[in-house]
Length: 184
Image 1 (cartoon, rainbow, N blue to C red):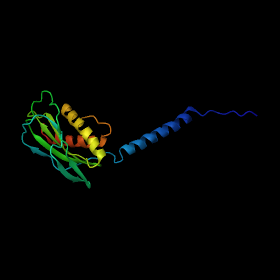
Image 2: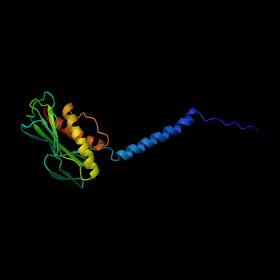
Image 3: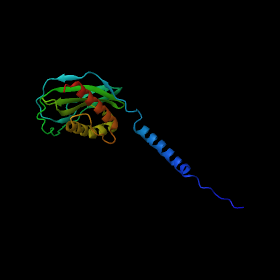
Image 4: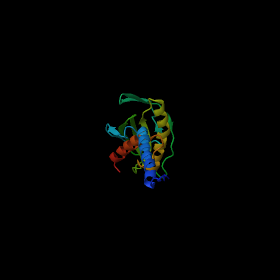
């Protein structure tokens, strides 16, 4: 008696691979973003009258401390210069401090400066999560990039830096709140 082995159909061959791939991608994305990327804005938006300084982008120009979600968040980075937006002139318009964007790692607060023509010309990070070495490292690398991109784009439509997705969500939410509140 001869036994003939029947080869499984193409669908039966591919389905397990597709199912395992989908499950693996879902698992990896859950590990990468367990909180679902929720960002809450806390506090009011304040406007300060004209500034006369040149366009620069900084991470926490003055040491500050705030407590967010039971974790201490302190800022102690020195200013890092960024080129002014071409044709925007000096940051001689409004200075707007945004609300704190609270996400799973802590809080992030921005201050934006505008020209008299209401063009975004500077973004300063006032507070950001840096209570853990990993948070500090990620934010010290990503936030200056976000500042530069925001100034170049003149908006909160900026690209995410790999490994700093949560900070990007908080940054763009905070900057968009400032832009929405600032008269155009």
